[in-house]
Length: 279
Image (tube, rainbow, N blue to C red):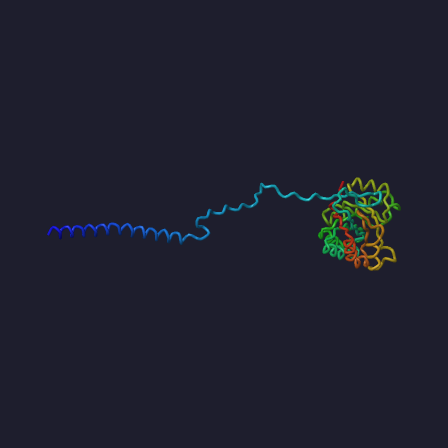
């Protein structure tokens, strides 16, 4: 009997121990499963990886990148060229067009705009008499071109009285400013003939008078586009800083694109009138 009691007690103790050991094991298994499920739900790029720091955009307080220094030019009356101390553009010319806007001025301006070539259009007063002509001048100005004064009637100033010269220059200034909103900065005398009075008057008006280095389109032998292109691109007078004279003429209009491309083919760039130092 005692042996049976002992065996019964041992069996009970073994069963209790087995139950006690099994319960913690089940709890750990459930915990491990929860941890596994939590880990699986974490996106791959977030698991055990620090968040990327936010990228910051350039603030207003940060310094802007420095702009390239602007090349400036001065007009040399000694040889009528543009002078600069910069060596960045060793081959540059200034394009000017006289007697505008006669017939082809707007078309020439549109061509130059397409070619990205700046220029000064010197205006004659007798070409802006009508509302239509005034509108043409306004369009040339709106395309971004500098407008210069070439007198009211294109008369040789040396043949005029002081009062007549004053009328030729100041009246046109007023006309141009009324149309474009800007008073002309540059003055070119007809035939390149300046008088002592016209020089003083131009200076008093804080304007600058300008002649040219070379031009050919008024000569009979160059009144066709092919001959004109050839001489304008290959003349021995072509030099760094040259002031090129052209006119509002049919053959010049036809040659204009080829002239520009020919000069560029020789390595020349075009001076913007904004680069010229003003008074």
